[in-house]
Amino acid sequence: MTEPESITSLETKTRPWWLRIPLTLQIVVALALAVGLGIALGAGNPSPSNATLITNLAIPAELVLKALRALATPLILVAVLHTFMTTNIPGTAGRRLAVLLLTNTTAAILIGLLVANVLHPGSWGNITAPTEAQAPTASLDPWGLFKDAVPDAILKPLVDNNVIQLIVIALSFGIVLRALKSEQIVEGKAAYQPIEDVIGILFEAVIRILNWVIALIPLAVFGIVAKTVAEKGFAPFQSLAAFIVAVLVALFLQACYYLTRVQIGSWVNPIAFLKGGSDAFLTAFSTSSSTVTMPITFEVLQTKIGLRESSASLGALVGANFNNDGTALYEAMSALYISQILGQHLGLGQQLIVVLTSIFASVGAAGIPNAGLVTMTLVFTSVGLPTQYIALLVTVDWFLDRCRTALNVMGDMTVSALLDGKKPRHLDEA
Image: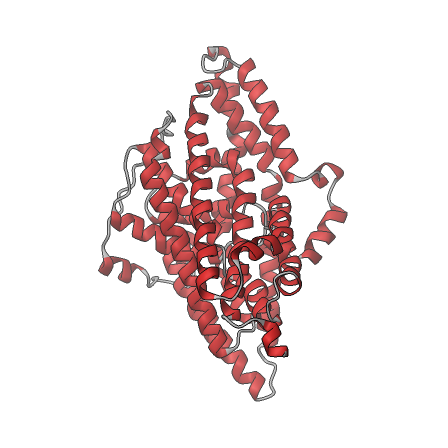
């Protein structure tokens, strides 16, 4: 996903030529060069004389991960506040929209966890845990979780990267600011406008900084893949291949869930739904951006599928700010996958924590490529998983990001179809 188009076009004009090359192509080239270097450095049997060089190859990935961890919490905070301040949702339709979004996201996470528990992709290969990695020790403590949700200080969750406390603060301020804005609009006042402008500027600022970090991902991929191939050969990537298969299976099952809901809850035929939305799906996959795809989604919902403008608007434009089912599914599966690699499988209580954290983290996933990597750090830390492994997931995220973005768009379209009900638009016109 990408940031708003106006920001994207401005930055595209000012970036050096090598940064205008599509990120996917940069990552593919980095992967090819990294494999070649890894083979040259030993491919699992490295020379002791190259030990320092091989170790230093991981430095870019470590720096990118540190930057992602640092930016994850402010991203969640400003994204939630920005959404509350700028999104216009009617009352009754808004409540139904909220229920649909929460239901779809929860279903996506449960499907992801089910597939990960059944296929167990973390046991298909051999990946050595980082020396600093710690096995997850979190357990289900509802009262402790409730107490920990209230921070000791307003800024403490930003420092501690505590996602639960951060969400409590973001939702509290977001709801209050939204209520104050509504009251002032009724009274003809505009005192809320400076706060809304500040939040909007902060949101754009975080997005721009994240774009700088994202620009370094090909370098991080080059380093971590070259180091992995040099030290351990290709054995670790067997497990990653299993992870890709598991995620694709889960995404397919979620797509089937969407089509079933469309069949049962709307007048739209699922086959017509797929055909009519093909342009949006292909655009989402090719651009890895639900934001860029948004106008196309809005258009095909009305012209090719035949939904009412109000339903298309709520699902494709409003709901898209909250609906990131593919991202939530991916983050939950990633957490379980890493726990399987460590040999410390997450229990039911820990998986419940993953569900809750993934739901909130997916809402804060910004409109940028590989946004799931940013919020994934919060999901991992919520159950004590080592974030060092995210560097390894970076090597396949460029592909899975496109797949889950297409699913996000399909989720937006599903919500629009369900909001449209069981009566076609042409019957209204008749």
